[in-house]
Image 1 (cartoon, rainbow, N blue to C red):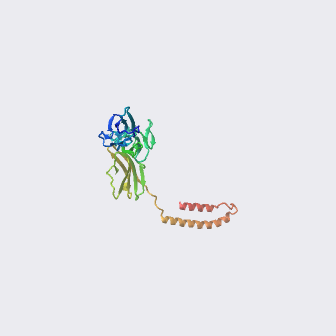
Image 2: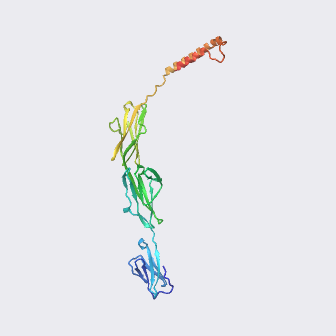
Image 3: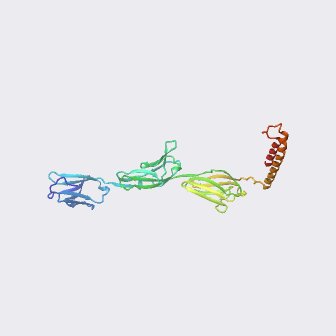
Length: 342
């Protein structure tokens, strides 16, 4: 910042002050403020400069250079300090758990200059689901702008980790991770409630459970004890967020395995179970080789008999039947052959 005149100021006093509150910072070459970040320089007492090191947000404002001439001269310069965003944790939501069907509000506040913009997105990259009106239709958005993200009548599909991102074009942008948990009692779906299998095969039973918080899952047979993983049973489950895929493999299915099986899922909010009934599928008996040989022999015998009879019958009936009509003996042989193979 420079004075407005070019004449020497050796016989005059030059002072710097904060314009807003008239706080005197320096008189001529002597700094009077206790702020060690401020100092003054000049070029042959013609150009005076006020230096502020390591700018802080509190340094924002206007500064006045004043010369004590007969008619006081002054010049004003203003400093706008840009400050990167900073999340205000005391005013920002923490992780929260809300009952399904209730409303939820996530809030994110940040300081900075210019004022930071707040953008929300899901950490997993999936769209944010927001309900529109009372109909319950879901609006899918990749990002949401605003310091408050509100959910009406929470649905389990809206559960997840959200990123609150604050930016104001002054790097770096900052973010906070907020987890929204939707709590609800278990529900179970069974894709096949009635299953049949031949004896000796491995049978797989499946159930799909949904719940939060996490569940304890197990299988029972005919209302009895829990089935454990081992040589007879293979018990497995696969979790993904609030969904659980349960399956039970019964090895070497036998008649003693026939019955009713229940997949059960329980958490602090409730319990659910699915029912599957397992029965035996009886396979048809394989063909008896002796019967096949007997049928082949009878077929050959019938073919031989048909040849002998056909020659004699054709002589007798050549005048009474057209040449392209089958003889009575041929029809009998065909019927006999068909009966033998039935």
